[in-house]
Amino acid sequence: MPLETPLSIGDLASATDTKVETIRWYERVGVLAAPARTSGNYRAYGAEHLERLSFGRHARDLEFSLDQVRDLLQLADDRNQSCDAVDRVAREHLEQVERKIADLEALRHELRDLIGQCRHGTVAECRIVRALAPDRGAA
Picture (spheres, rainbow, N blue to C red):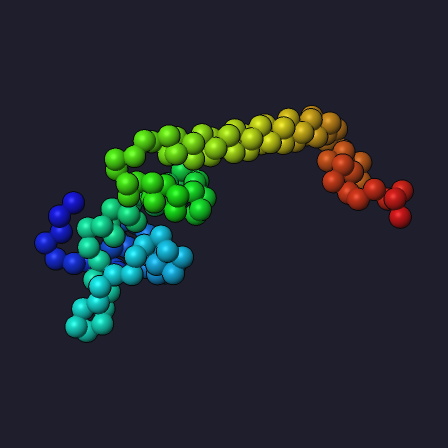
């Protein structure tokens, strides 16, 4: 991705739909290499920054963790290696997503059961409020 002129942090933020502070944070945590500086000491980002930030943002949109993003970027830097390690990271993430989905489905079932117990009486008789209240007999 050739760039004719370096990007300012604002331009990089706009190009990747990323907040400026997030870009600075990615630099601090090592996801992005520190950019060169202009004679006026402004950050000057190149194509490699744009590519890495775009990659990282897309991975974060898919809810890969920061550590997983770092791993994927490191793996992506060595284009000649087998993609087995990349596949392993993605499979581990998929397993995490599937566990979250199962947890959310159990939560949905529990909430539907609670709502189904509603008798449309007063709050004092409300089954939902009773189910959420602390056990008064445990005191």
